[in-house]
Length: 295
Image (cartoon, rainbow, N blue to C red; front, side, top):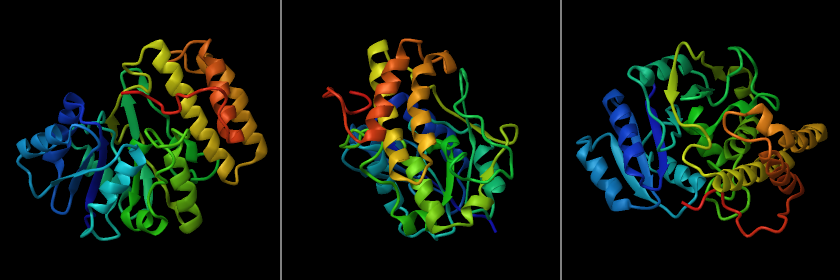
């Protein structure tokens, strides 16, 4: 049986990347597939772009307040007529789908409750996925990012979607970690997800994306790094991860400039350390800039 593939995209209405996403994915959509675009700014521009695609049965536009998690949930709610067995993905507005990738994702995840695909950027994959057959659990859940996730709509409905207090643009200091939080809750609600999660091989399918620090000046890069570390640290503290895992994550922030030298500098390590410490302890230290980005 062919499963519908649904895409929920939260956007601030940046036209060039969103146009690339629409142009790449819409020609690949089939019967039952849908693209829900949730405009959190520049809504009229987004509607014009959707109308220009001339695919009224495939694209739906909604609006919401800011926050990527809120936007994704608004997209999920737009799939009111979809069956629980439909597959859902959450591309960023900077994501794109090479020709053939939509059907490849549909085929590779098939009847599994969930899976992940590689997100390729100009400097390499955002994360290298585990080998097929590796269980999804506390060691591997970190290798799934929002735009790489494929998950059954029924699971999302059962657990209430994303926590809107976590993630980029949320009205809280916890600016990342929303997909990890979602998957930890999904594992509790749907234990079979652990052994049935599909890690697709990059040679089989990959989607396009941009590096985490793309377009950011040094100050913006550090702000985002701290805010993201803060969010992931909060998720670590909320869920039953081992104590050594939480504090190891905090300490590892000091060497992020070495481990991820293509995106960060050695001096960024202190920023990462502070953000991660804020998340694990649940408090912020002397900053009014709690969101990840200002634009």
